[in-house]
Amino acid sequence: MGGVEERTTGRLAAFTDGVFAIAITLLVLTIRIPEPQEDLGQVLVRQWPAFVAYTISFLAIGVMWVSHHQMFTVIVRTTTTFLFLNILFLLPIAFFPYPTALVATYLLEPSGRTLAVLVYGATSVAIAVMFNVLWGYASRRGLLIPRARPNGLRTRGFSLGPVVYLAGTLAAIVNPFVALAIFAAVTVYWMLPGRLPGR
Image 1 (cartoon, rainbow, N blue to C red):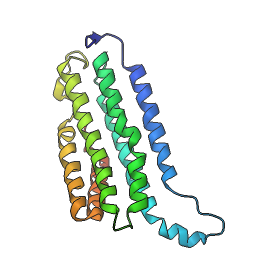
Image 2 (image 1 turned 120 degrees about the vertical axis):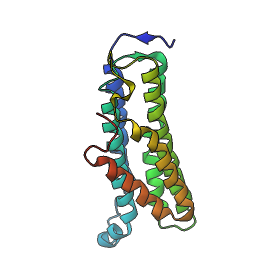
Image 3 (image 1 turned 180 degrees about the vertical axis):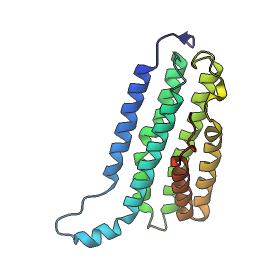
Image 4 (image 1 turned 120 degrees about the horizontal axis):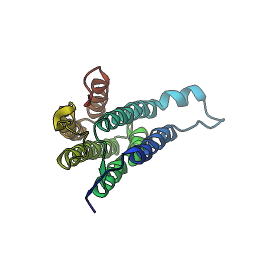
């Protein structure tokens, strides 16, 4: 079941791209359309948490997609186990619109915002962990380009990801707004040239 298959990763990448595309598109559903009888200007101002959550999550998923894409510039073979690991990686990716909606809904509610950001952070931690699982399995099982070294990618970001996101998640216990600022800062940092794990 876990033997190396010589076929390329084309179908895996295509399926993964589809899941990313759906997840990033569903994020917009976290922003409620005001009712005609409501004051549009006031509603838009009150919806700032939804716009903030949407922006952070949209950019975060974008960073995840780019990082996954760069990883697959050197991963060229698959195993059945690796295919299932990629499915498990996509589980929190597809789930991401839900914690985004929680943050958008509860950020201004003192009774619920801490838990909402904790769920958001836990989802981010799960994604970061699965990045490490995918890369670790691929490098150990010889799924890379022939003669490619496991450190052929800048993989330090993979290992740091769970730590940084866990720190942000724990910060939500003290201050959910600080936690969101950490998540946003990490996303912006990895969008800078040469910072994202990859080639």
